[in-house]
Image 1: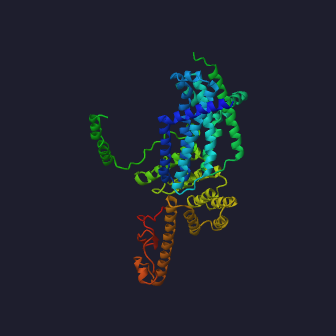
Image 2: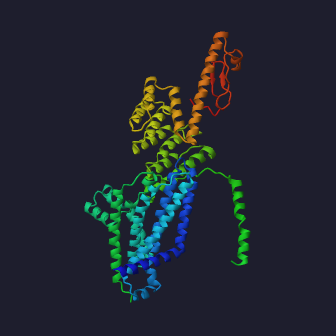
Image 3: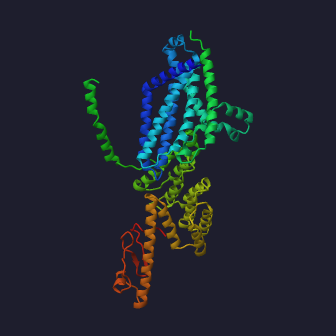
Length: 258
Length: 287
């Protein structure tokens, strides 16, 4: 178990180094910082809303760029190794497929954590530089955002074990979009009363509700997010991520690489 | 990069500022924003940006401010046709954006050329805000003020101000103002108190400037009334009306200035003895 963990961590560390080397990641961070700076300028054009707009832009950038990284790097984590044929020598070593798969997940998860932390720091500095109080409450929006991104990575990895990286990216984006419209599924009967309630309930249950990870607006207004709700969101994210990761792992383990 | 393409780029690059300068010269450097809104429903816009509603509301709010400023400054007809839909979309995307209701209502209610001159719509925007933010006493206060200041409805204004006074944290003077409105049916002093409140509550910017200007208008109206009283006194003493306002000073009946707060001389109708703010003055407002 101990050795397995250290092997998975080695894969994670390598994945982190690899993703940081990816130029696209640097570009995204660069753009995120640019957006925050743009927020600084845009804030001056608004009326009394500069602080809220800065927070909105900063948090939206973290969300958007985080999802882009999770989808486009996440779908390539496994498939690239297969396409480059670098997976075969790895699996020939004393490294199980589970260790490889989970190590990849942890590596990208850590990249996203670093990415979010840098952006959060940038946002706090921007707020400080404009004479606003650096709001540590922003963490209560960033933390659930991170949990949502981990779930996106899990989906990206699941799809990448089933199909090509391009199609996997399309499917992951689809899940994220549908997940953000989960409330529409829940309220479907208000528009289409003929739809059986069981169907809407079943559909709502099988779609991850990404709105659960979204506290951006609340936090931008300086409202507190309770520890209770954050705990439930953590549990919700953990359950979904474990299920999706489990499916991905099962698919990866059953795949024939001959 | 080899030398030839680099040289070509260096030669082409100055064409960009040059052509921009020519375009500005022909079409004007600042052009009013195009009167185009592709999506008219806030709910539709909301569905297009799941998870980013708050950011979209900021963008629409910025566009509202830019549109209002652009129309006010550069448009010749100043119809502000997109103003209401822009405010509606902004507030549908973020129903808690209090500033959009308060400033949006002012933009809509002020008479042209300062605003859209549609106070009924301004009141509707504030009513939407009150429904969305029932605990925001300032929104209720503004709704009461607008009923009085723009719709001349002292009774409704008084009722709404009393409702605002019931909200936790509301200002203590709302109750007395409501009672005064009900008792007197409204007067200039009530208007002055309302504009002074708006002035004191607003930060530097459009709303504060507007409230300041409104207070100066009220001061000018007070001066015009005082001058009219002096005209009556002159007539009582001399058996005729003065031909010009300067005669009041010569007769020792007026010691102050004969110009309004914008330094424009007051108008005087000698046949009827009326003293008026001239239409050419920034202090003039339609009756």
